[in-house]
Length: 139
Image (cartoon, rainbow, N blue to C red):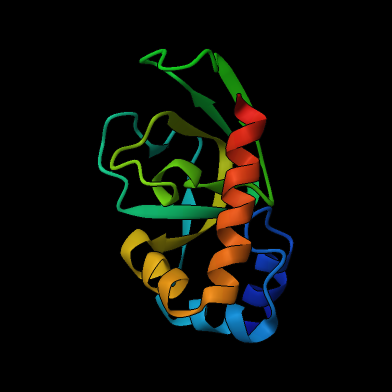
């Protein structure tokens, strides 16, 4: 993926869509592209949340196996951000997420993303406001 494709992709993501080009360019060096194959686990409930994911293409299914909340099973696809609870402070994944077919994602080390949030107050505000809105929808 080129830098321009990366920026276009993140502009269509539920968490990053409010950021400017300069703010998105800061994320380019720390992101990597990853493909998950059908049935492959993207996240596992209870495991450390060291990375977060911006879904570029494909469909996934998330389940709350520990029944922390009544999620049951939820499907999602392009534009979704997996990592709202880690950005909000959770140390581990609260749900398990499995690829349904091939899933392409941009992967960000959580520590690097948090550094960016602290170093750029404007971008940090936009992202954390979106995180809060996302969490409120779940209540």
